[in-house]
Image (cartoon, rainbow, N blue to C red; front, side, top):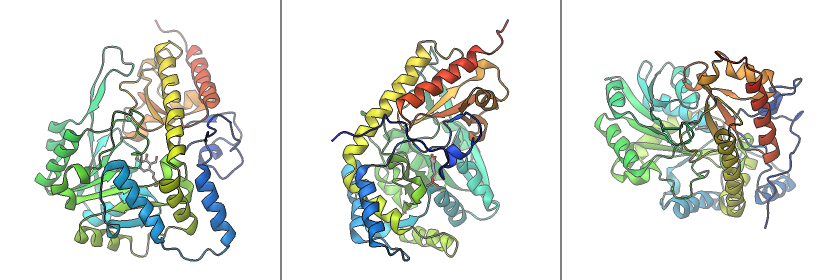
Length: 396
Ligand SMILES: Cc1ncc(COP(=O)(O)O)c(C=O)c1O
């Protein structure tokens, strides 16, 4: 079966957050992380069937939905999970916030590795906990065009721990640097957390979007089984299958006491997952693998297109430090352009990007581009970026 990742579908005027940002301006939105693709046919069929039933009471997952998640963990990652470990959530950001409240008290500290998806830094603060960002170390390559790598700065991490540190947030694969952490790093991280008695919360929302086929997804709870009792793994079908608007995610928490703390922190304030969300989740994990493989091929093509633009001189002054191992997000170094507000500048030239400063990068240094879109949209975005750069006054 072939799937269509080429047709440009209109989203302007719909309920899309991404497209509503610029209702009256000709700005191509390439910011928030959802894709401009229709969901897999199996998901659409499941939703149609569920709508046809016509009754939408309070929902609880049926066995086949739980089985779909359990089987995906087993077949994709070799991770055997007990259905009792699953706590359903309406979103992963919600999961980060709940984890902060469950694992730290007001004034206690939560570590994360920056640059990072902004809620990693804001979630602790939302409830009076303290976010402690630890910068990743960039080992730059000779060209600055994908030949360097981002690594955990173990010394900085150790130095950041205080008696108030209770929790570590990992993002694997990492948004925005698109890194897939390796087994030795994950084991070392789990040991670090054990040494300091920290809960390790691993956001693995992008784990089915690994573009480098040689890299497996390794759930931290699986690679460090002796420390699994201190892990909370957050997953969802939302990014991979482009259904974030259906609000369906889950935490996997092997330890019963930690799970009870987590569930207590959700009480009365975390909304339940909906009937449509469960239907989409089951069809995603069980019936959409062929679509996912086709999606990965399309995303690899778009990633290669971005590298061709960068290496071919289409975007002079724009670099990318490391390979894009996963996700449909590219972390672009625009510091050489000398702009104080690169996002505002590119918006003025018709492209809407995410501001690296929100991810903890120095102001003006980075932007993030979302390439989860048809090639024609990406080409147009790159063309507008190139025109924006060409319009900059010449230096020197
Ligand atoms: C690492 C990461 N976690 C969580 C989310 C958002 O999750 P949700 O929409 O389920 O709250 C995103 C969205 O981009 C993300 O990149």
